[in-house]
Image (cartoon, rainbow, N blue to C red; front, side, top):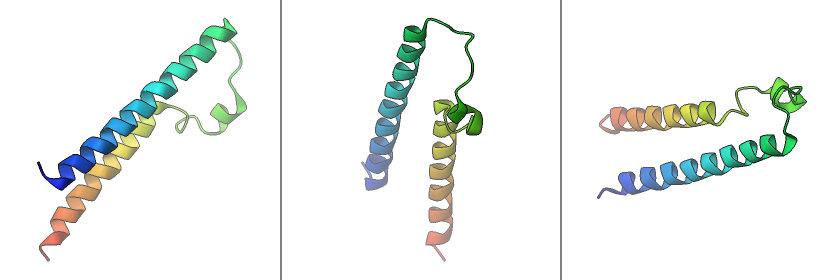
Length: 77
């Protein structure tokens, strides 16, 4: 396999493990509170998109794909 495939595989695996751990820790914290209709934390109010692992993975994935596209587009110039 190509070097780029291995790098992409490693990045995706690390990101998936991080997001799995983060989602598990958030779910465990919610279970400990035992109140689902509580107030929203101030850090989440300030940065609602950065605290959501789905948005983080979409942003990182989009940047990686855009980087590969630009790399291959300008490699031949």
